[in-house]
Length: 336
Image (cartoon, rainbow, N blue to C red; front, side):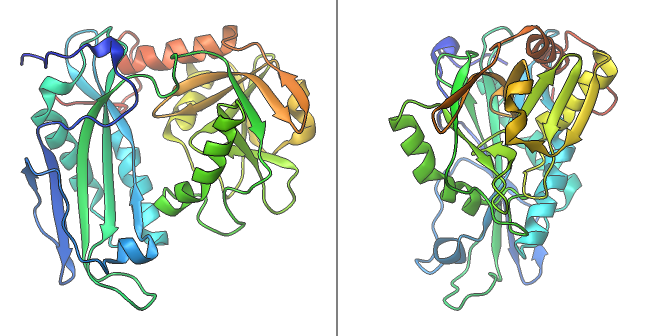
């Protein structure tokens, strides 16, 4: 299929309307079959549950043009499982995981002309999401829901592409103990908006949140998990209020099985930050963005930026995604 006439290298991380999106509705206790549609608009009641009580969750993944020219998607089954967990926590009907993957495939296939070519540095970002649709004025879950999947071509998540970031330890909390930090609920991100704008205004790229119970351990940023390197060991913070990143989970496997590294998934104390030589943020949007500096209330902890180990992790994972390196079984979903 002929690609759209776009300057792929100039794309930022923003929304571009593409040709088709998938829509399915839940009513009277069941999901309909869903359809692909040209209509990118949503019309609902002013009293829709999502507008009153933020009953919504979402996922994010990417489709790529691999080195052999095939269009592929990375581990969509894990996104389906994570959305199911989010729905259960938010009292929303689970969209069947097999149908979730099929909806992603349909959406990408229908927008194949928008999948950036191999080597362009751009990707097709895929956003499945669900929300309470009907009119709810009392505080309770909705009765009707809509599940949608749209796709948009994007460039790097952080401006300037892969470069060392400067982040700060936040005074505000991302998630409460026994709250919703472990699911991909829209409300978690709404809570972070004030803080990310404040961080940018003060010259920081992101906020690093600590556990809200004791404020002594590293958790994650507003939009990515954190990883640390010490010698030949990859260390990832462990907490019940951290969103389980699919990219982080994949990097843990890559570190162990491809690079022969030791991996520690454990609580990481603030007092340990100076013990690590490299650090990075990982997630679907950024893959890995290296950390240059963490600022802890005036104290600066410096890292190697795109150091040798972060570089190897990045190269190996993106190599798997792009088809340059053989992927573990089940990691790559071929679209066409």
